[in-house]
Length: 356
Image 1: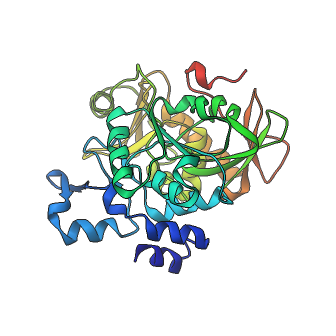
Image 2: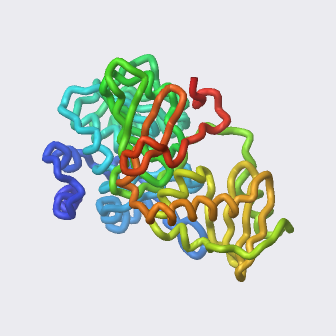
């Protein structure tokens, strides 16, 4: 059984979560998933029989939409996040990012459906998840709404858990937490556990040892389509120079954690001709044969290299050495609990993320 395998691997250490993973049938939440092939995405459905079922019950991340806007997270990563909530059994939990509904089912099994609220911006996803949950016997409150706003109607919550990547913690989430409540969320390529201080707007956080590469929270508009941006990056002229570091720096997990935290929204991919870095603000960089070509509103690779040098000078710290210090005006990154921040998270241009 998958739950037993997760226990044997050390991914599940809490017997209550072992029971939940044993009880909830993952296959009811993933009627199909997509795998990459040389000919593009290939769909694997229930009709595929053992291939479909055996893959679902392995510790595997599954893409559940062919446009890669929804997925079922690898169960070991789900377990790490759920255990980080440190539930006692009667708390109220808000989930941001309903997806297939599997995580909401695990929470409902652990707490009972009446303790769980789950939101997603995609109405179709919410409808599908509600059907999946009902077929498994769970009935948490689901809502199709922008997760960046939380869900004030059922607040305050003991815990908030997000299954989508953020680069900044929304003020609405902090406001909807009870005193001493906690948030477990992907932040950049890390997993943050944030605790609200009693009787104040201050919160502090640490990072779990696990790497986490989640899909971003979907809410932003007015950004350049990725396909157009990649075409620009591959074919356009721009400023050129010799690069100091190539894209291999993103293959070091500790370095990538720092780069994703300090250079939010930068994505790196390999094309046939070159390595391309891009940001949805229209900035891009192309790396080939020792030369970087850059264009758009920012010199993207200059900023990436500068951030990498800072990490090297700090002694290549692992993610667990960083902390979060959050107030109503600042979200700062500390190293080894030093009072002097090494970085400040900047909200994207969305008024709901602005500090006050």
